[in-house]
Image (cartoon, rainbow, N blue to C red; front, side, top):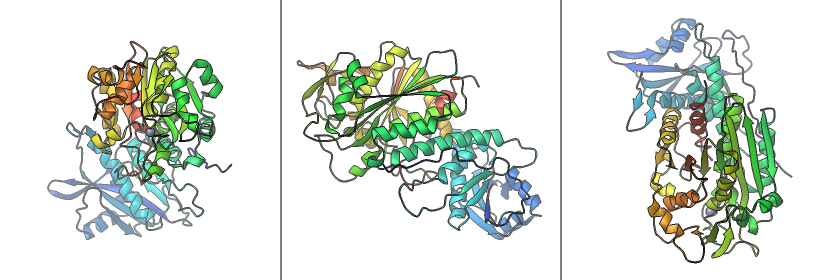
Length: 507
Ligand SMILES: [Zn+2]
């Protein structure tokens, strides 16, 4: 079996010696400049340092191009010193822009990610693949921008482009390595989610997904259980199993446990449809290949767990991933068929392409036995969410104002934002008022497809439990409109989930 590998946490040099004499590889450096009123420009602390090291060459060269480098734009200078053959200087705009209330965005952090991407692109396109980045005053965020923008999915291409090696510029007096390390964990976890999501579906079946997870999470204090079809049958997961009936690939139900605190577990559930043809309610052919990414939710929750464990956060985390293929065949579920979920509720599968909610339903019911602190499910669930928000943010449905506040704060910090939608009875009524069964998987009403999908899930959430549903169909990729994420599946919102969990545990 051909299998793709993802080189997780590939070692990057943690301690760069500034005065290196090794000139065998061309080295590049990315530095920033602010704009300041009354002055042509203002150097960052690291750029100040480099200016001294280069005997004022940096300032001289910036002045030669007029001094005013626009935000997000890069100028590349050559031969300023003996260590770096080329230096990309990126405009950062005004210093300390702060939090933008309407945008719900920490603008300084987003500027840094974008600046790192701009410098990386400028140097990489000139054949420089050994790139050192300054911290821009926030090494954690600089690492995110550098590592996200320097990685791209190349899959099974025989001749791959070299991906840059990424380092932090050490400046005397600044202790930034540990922050850089944290940022690199977040970015590399998101890159892992991008890898899982972008891999073609014949190379990322439910079974192969599990193998990848086993390999990536080994040595991280995580218990890995891969449940099979028989296990799900014994538990009565008729809703989950109904989706895979048309596929020749066996379904899997992945259960991952990370225990590092005395507390109830936080439960993450990710939709793992490794390919969604729509089943008998077949999708149109155009862009159907994108449905290889219909396990983006699964990829995000696994990647989040990986980061939480790598950071050794004091938390208990349970990750549940139902994995299936949704295919049409003689044995596939047909529109109008009725199946029974693990909690006994009967579901009419009116449309076999509304399958994500069917596999999540049983995972939600199953999570009850762990007495969760809260449950958060992530799913590329509805095309309607793409219509509503485009690729700007993930849609959120929740019964907890407090959890939503934390999630929104996390999104403002990571630049990968969320936006809340209603969980009203109005929508529940549309899927439950039937004579012959308990729930319909699409319902009668036209419009509001993301809201009825969330209302469907609500029918399976354990009572009195805080719950968040994230619909990530709009942000999954393959073109998510973010400057520091090259084209391909996006791995969004992995970093937001990591921050969300981090904000709730002991520092
Ligand atoms: Zn579907």
